[in-house]
Image (cartoon, rainbow, N blue to C red; front, side, top):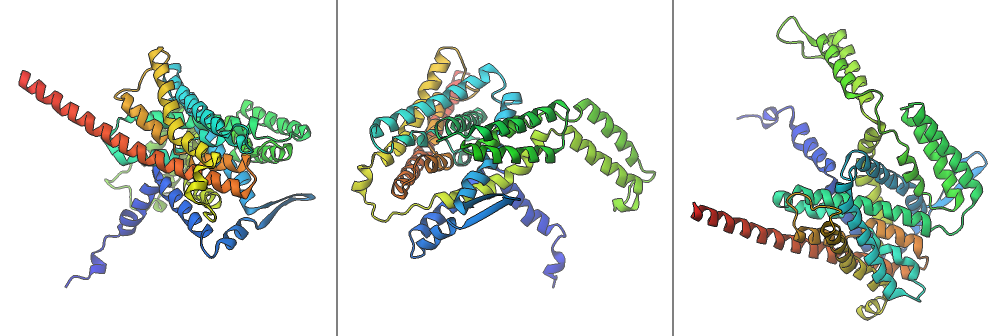
Length: 462
């Protein structure tokens, strides 16, 4: 009888446990699973017999002290004002990368998603204002304007290769442009009072970032220190502190210590050290000091050719997507259904304005503005993308969730109104996700039938 333990390969853990886990965490859309789980957990807890403990947990005070300077905030505020700064920072890095070398780097490629994002913000905002004009909730007009890129990409990933690659690129690009609009709205419209003294201090820190760029400094820790100073200064100024994350991201260097040609030359020189007299260079690199030094030289060369922007984005993204955002969702999605009924929800302009803004306004604005951009010649549809795809992507753009919850917390203070806004966000996002998935499934089926009919006609003609 064969001992099953001895028959197991040594790579069992790496290949069958660690490998799939790494594959899961590398997929950006996978974060939507954790976001959904965290949101459901928050709603269940907030409506259980232990509901008071949920709110007590979020209102625990934590103090950050720098000598005599102290910042005391509740856990919920640290999450929304502190941790979310890292999310905005990553958004800023993505926007900068897209502008420099991505889908927003040329006028033709950038205009379609940018114009679509503008339409996807204006129309939902107009629907919300139409329903809430003259009420105490009118300040929440920015809530239905945002798209949650993690949930949207998670939904579109269901179709695999049945949808053109250009559609995923379009959805990603307009969601990123949408995030930029949300950051501007937060900075301009949700700042209650400005303390100019702190803003002047912030400007000096920003000048420090400029000087570090001009001196070709690539030391990440220096940018982190200056970024912390900017965050504290922005916090004291009255502007929402998450804006600091976007400001710092714009000054993270996007050029490496040296270019690719020098990197290739260095690598070729190092690889010469691995020429071995026998067929094998040996199992352990520790047996050869020259090989060990060569590996270290390769590691240094890879580090120097990688840009700080690229390095930070790759290092922070998994922590943001699979750590910070689920924590944020758990802290903000705790909707209490106590005292709510269908009649009260339908009569609440806040809930209906958000839900209709996301479910109706988003696809309408994205599709109409995209159609206008293409028909006027300002932009072109991506290869293989049809108008039915654009409308379906617009529906998925109505999944507002993360940024919508964030803006909701900034624009509303009443716990009752916050609950109604959360209900509107969840309702609009769920309806948008279901409608987008069903519509794109129908579009894929119709497109497949047309291709099959065309193939039959072509074969008959031959």
